[in-house]
Image: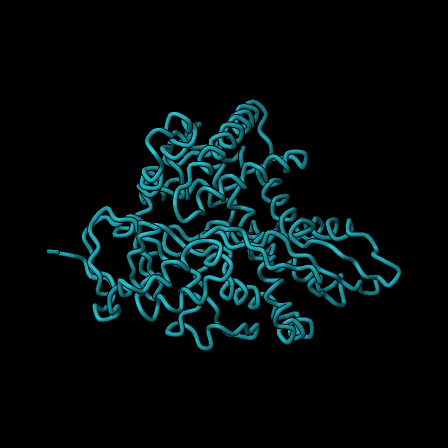
Length: 436
């Protein structure tokens, strides 16, 4: 391969796994991989940090410094073209059955563009997610969380409350916050959950699945019709919400057209709560499995902002980014041609011993934690500050409401079969109410 761009020292990777060794390849299939990806990441980092997976049909990158490079270097690892590649994995005779999916992923969207198009879209959105504006939301986040916890009631005679954290707090809190920002009423949250579930299932799978594509087509048709109606309404009667701001936003004389408004809104609405739901759920489970760390946080609540970063690192809500190479490259000793799909595992970078001391230990006192959980470069998650705020408030209020928290006896450790968005199906808990 001539004139290839070199990323990473060429002696990093010893090459692919031996042809006869199918253990890692088999482990990449759900549900084993999605239940606990970290042992698979460790083996990939050690034996093949840049690995061609026949199952994924992609190069998989697990070494931390290479993941960082891929996430940041959009000129070489592009966000443009991934959706076309993913659609190409579906059978040709399925295409007439999923016209909405095809049309949606052909539309300009902030997550599937590079600068300068991405820069334009991000500028239009960024004012809503500045640290100052996010900080102003804390009282609203706290009030909503308190109402949700009040709905759990007073428990039995001993003050013990049984509840599913995902259903009771981790999901409804962030969906209410992003819904209020966007002007989506509480009565529409059930539809938003149903539509978002279909988006997450399709986009987060390791390979494109026909059944998921068909389910997504139905959901997207409803989702887009709902948002188009909201756009028309905001043009006629603007409100104090993010959608009205986007309808009116101008960047150098350029506005978002209706298709861009709808596609970007879908991205914001599902991503705006999915990551935070998983942060709250994964983080709570991690703390319950490390009672010494939970006890430390209860004694020293001032550690919580840093602890949120450590929880993001330890079990990231988002596990990967996807890119397409824009040129022939040599990365970690492996030659990858132009136009090739690459998946970089953020969750693996967060556990790489070359990047972190004691990477497989949860330590809420760990200093200077800057995980890769929100990506990097121009595609760094625009809602990261909001997710951190919601996570911190949720943990604070759980600790304040309950003197003790325990996993329910029937907890089964069930994770969504999703490679990208790592989250629990449910998290049944038993809480002992504090004296209030």
